[in-house]
Image 1 (cartoon, rainbow, N blue to C red):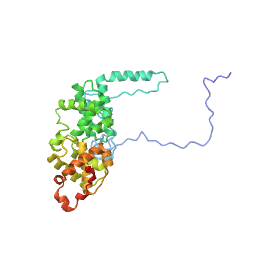
Image 2: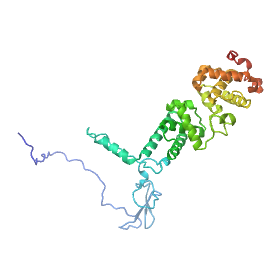
Image 3: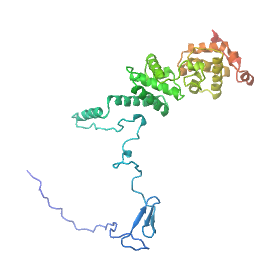
Image 4: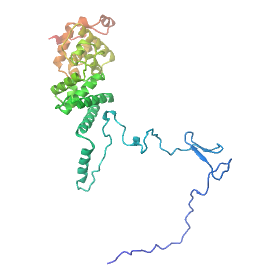
Length: 353
């Protein structure tokens, strides 16, 4: 049995051509000012201008000096390490909460210690209320991204949820229903309204539970009334979901020209003025008005296409159309007929059956 030698001999030196010489900086060379010629020069690095200046006579010895110091400044009164470069940007909505995360690796050799450490770290870092807020914030951001909503709506919804959680307004309600109500209110406050049906399809929350949470938040935060406000006030004075606010998205999904949207908005306002189709939901009024305007202007769209975009049944759209057709003289301006934009004979009469 052979054993390795404890102190092996060095490899024999092989004589051959000499290695090429290596070049390096000469540490014996010192930089001095050519004017002063002081053996102990006072060289100053001016990082503001990027120059290398003699401190005695002011002669510029070099330029384009690279600043190797840290690129940020700390104005804190206390001394110590600068925490401004640790972690992500601070979130004002999480003020008073620990915003730094500790990540523990899963690689533990199959012993299961990593999972126990992660569980212990999650319990020690945040309390139960803080974990609920973080979970709700993640769900709000995820659902707003799925709905293609801007970040401002996500921030408003987070503020609403945080206030409702601090004041215990919806204790006992499901988390998804509270988040859905906050997103619904945030959309109205930001003038990007979404209907109850759209919010329910996104969050998979029943309309009844969503309505209960919305009514509770509406009363607690003293918000403007929802469904009835669009029929009594203009959309400029009320952030509620009105038919005019839904026309932009519906017309864009139907690929309708801009003039259809403007004329349809005027028809809806004239119908509200004369009390036509009062009591109908904004979605039904918007769908019926689009169907009426498309036939009036010759930009025909089928009831099925409008129903798919608006999310209402075809019978509801035809019912609103029949109400508009009965009082079409009050809704259509004479100047549209004179300019040739609108024609009475384009309106289908068979929908009156």
